Image 1 (cartoon, rainbow, N blue to C red):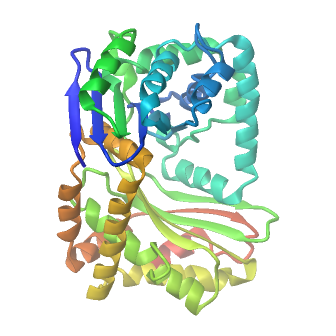
Image 2 (spheres, rainbow, N blue to C red; image 1 turned 135 degrees about the vertical axis):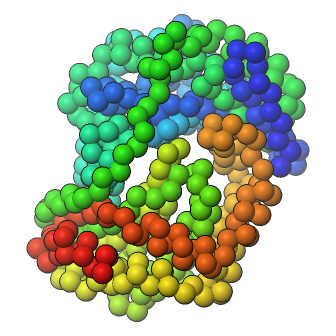
Image 3 (cartoon, rainbow, N blue to C red; image 1 turned 45 degrees about the vertical axis):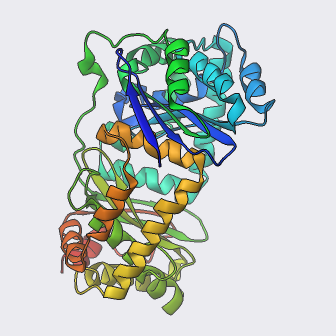
Length: 423
């Protein structure tokens, strides 16, 4: 990776990765703001703003924005997470200047017409409804809310139907003026490009960004306060969906890579302990996996599975048993395999220009430094079996969070599951 970074005087950061052997460029704007920056009455505003940025500027209508990119075969998209929002385009290298022009226009000059707000409000309500109808989507909203009750980090990224129905244009525009300021934005590009060219285009195109508000304290967020507990929702479904998790480590923790290796060994692939025990040996589930989600000030270690209602009495003890076993000796071959899987994912990800740009931008936002893949690989290689066992004992000693949805008549109660995990 040939990464170069330039910081402009106004605080806007530019980071590029020159890949001369490809014919495309992925370029985008990443904002250091997400759903956890919202107040409770505005839950969902970050996501609704992301939608509305594409709905027109003084010089482009929403259809013109879409057509300008797709007329040259480009692909444009965006996402909102709890800590970051992104607007990005992947297209042929010769069209990068046009893509940056479009991005600068929608980020600096969104008009958000009232009629578009009403239409997109209806679209987002449909999106919320779709999530409610998708058990393994809504389950994780239930989980997050239970892990972090009465906090922005525990609220759904999409917002609630009631709040979205009442979201006003002024709220959306005020959010943009507060958060879409130079020091919170990163321009990232990866592909066949010249860094100096990207810098000059950025200076010319992003000159209209507003300055940060005088009271910058309003743009922060409260420290995550994990609580845990249970959210049990009985519903007439074919399967019972289970998410069982624990308070975990932030991305800045010294044990971060040990936790990633532990997650891979426990539930990261077909050779993982959970897959082999739950699916291959017992036939209790089609899908079972572990996931380690990190934030700036905390994290979540979550195990998900779905099973038939009659298999719940066997499934839960089996899950708890694997959580207990990972805290005891880990085989060297498991370490080798887990590291190889993580390393391959990191390296093969370089084959995607969009993934490269996304990784660079988020790393700069989270760590305020350029991504150094070789340094990350060294940190991964340094993880020992003792580190994995230590971090497992550290994570699984805490209070669990249980979210369950479906036919749950044979599910053990939360206190019984908690007792199994502590025993």
